[in-house]
Length: 175
Image 1 (cartoon, rainbow, N blue to C red):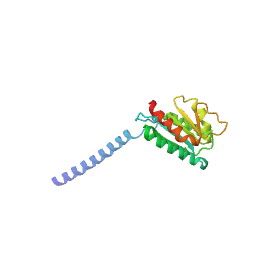
Image 2 (image 1 turned 30 degrees about the vertical axis):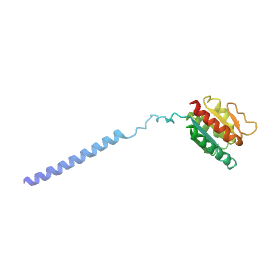
Image 3 (image 1 turned 90 degrees about the horizontal axis):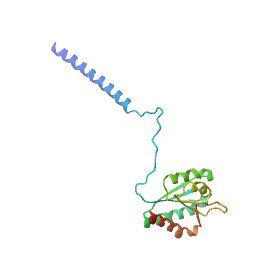
Image 4 (image 1 turned 180 degrees about the vertical axis):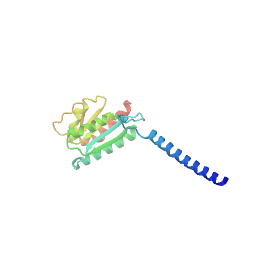
C-alpha cells in the first residue's frame, strides 16, 4: 500500500508543478506584454556621435539628372576622405517641390551641415526649407532658370569638383 500512496503523491506533485508553471508563465507574459493603450511611442532621433559635420545629397531619381547626381556624389565622397566629413545621399522619386520639401526638412532635422540638391523638385523646395534652417548651408546644382535661391548657392555641373569639394573641406575646417 505504501507504494500506491507514493505514486499518488508523485502524480499530485507533478500536477501541482505543471499548474504552477502555467500560472507563472501567464503572469510573466502579462507583465512583459507591450502596453498599447493610449501611450505614445518613443520619439526617434537621428544622432551622429562622431561629432563630424555631414554633407547630404538630395535628388530625384529621374534619368535626366542621373549623371549629374552621380558626379556630385563622387565629388562628395572624394572630398570627405580628405576632410573627415560624413556624407550621405537621398535619391528618391518625387514629382515636384511640394513632395521634395519634407525630405529636405528631414535632412535638416538629421543635422546635415551642408545639403546639396539636384533636380527641379529639390531645387524648387530649397528656398522654403532654407528659410527655417539658417544653421545649414545649401547648394543647388544646375537649378532651373528663375528659381529663387534665397539662402543657397547655385553651382553648375562644371563647378562641382572645385567649388563643391571646397565647400565640403570648409565644413571640416569650421568644426
